[in-house]
Image: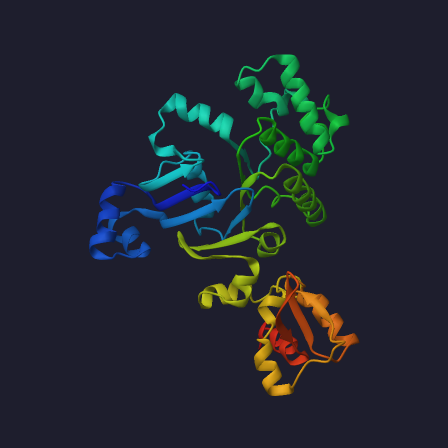
Length: 351
């Protein structure tokens, strides 16, 4: 595993039901589909031959509709579920090779997990809830309370440490859950639809809070969601799953601009391109523009290759000249009004 790869999983399968190994053998040898495996062998394919890697410090979103396998997959990272086949490495550790005590230590020290249900201990105060991972590590009480209090300050709940879970709103309880996952300073955060049970306004506020914390703490995060808007908003990369398989992995821009198949195209059809697509995906080569239209005027507007489509459109409204795109001070492309219109039209559903 390279230094910039924190998580590497290879050819992971999870088959539920009787004799999963036989079901997997039938899939390999006879090419059975998920439906055929269920009908013939009474087994359910939850994850089908998934391989992926997660880079250090990135937020990697795994998304799909209900039953796609996303939550099943993430539970393999810390072996809450045992895969039928495949390899899982986190920070160079072969997770499948760990014995019970090693696995318990690994979970406690390397991985923090935040679930959709807050799972706070009702008989413990907020501070005690956050300190639990450190208590399991047998950190001295004064030290674990100090560390827990520091984490509560980071999630802006420092004044609520003596309260109990039932005294907090749903959004506040989820922030306590996040603080608890962070208290042990894990290398990896696993977040399984952590905000989906919350009201839309609170959900967006917590997304903002999570984005802020991610910039501060730089934790490698695997974030499960069924909400494409949420994935686009917070994810550095997105993986789309269907029927247990990984259909496409890429940035939001990659997936919106170049969907792998009709399923992904339909999935992303409702997403606005305005904040997702950037100048480098819209531009045309400078030489092509000059051949067709002649040299650019000296006062042509200039933008960075990361400029959003929304800002490009506003710029084109104010200036009819083609827009010059640069990267690191080097001119790399040109964007015309026609390029912008084409990008917007291609992202519009046609009835």
